[in-house]
Length: 330
Image: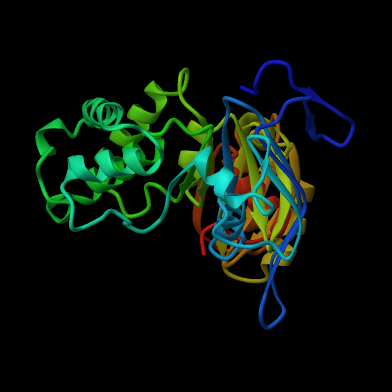
């Protein structure tokens, strides 16, 4: 659900007086004329979990890098918690926490020491840092590993420790860059259970991911990004409703799929759109019962041989495919 107080203007953009992240024409062009982020305009509101969803190479990590001072923008402006991250990077680092894709824990320190010295670095006195480290270990279910070297942690434990470290100094915004990539399902669930428990008293969360299910289940709003641009932005439910269908039929068949698309659009009741996606065809259908027999009959009557057929509800990947004509995962 969108944060309270938000309104929608005619362009579909959410507008609100107070934002915790504000980007204005934020652009990053790498050497070789590689345009990673293209004039990004974005507003993230206090207290929400905001998801940036897209395939590898879409510009998600570069966007997060600019917002966290690790990447210098080519042009444009980025304000995080009221601070211009380009003009005042040192101040910006005080109000953000970052959980990166790669393990950045100090291997020379124990689990507890990673937290304690992080707190000291961010200005906590010795007593405050000890208390914060102890509380974080308990919150992130790492108390039994207090004195363990970080090299002895599993992937899920290391990710929880990085999250604990990132919020130890109580930042205004927590940036999660592919936080569950490579984790087993149990570790993913454990991490999000902990983060969910912190939502009411914790920071705004900016999640960069290519995991559709994660974005759908965890985010208040999601922006779908590709080639450095935002293609769509809304609540997960709003994005899926924008497809204009309640059933997605995926068809694999021999023959000309473009011709099959025209046949199914014309012959299947409630069909709103059909498009080729790789070696398959996706048919969008709204409000029509018994769609599978219709698809089979229409295809066979036109001389097509079906090799596979599946039905699903619209997903965020459906939205992405509808916008770009290609699969989200790359």
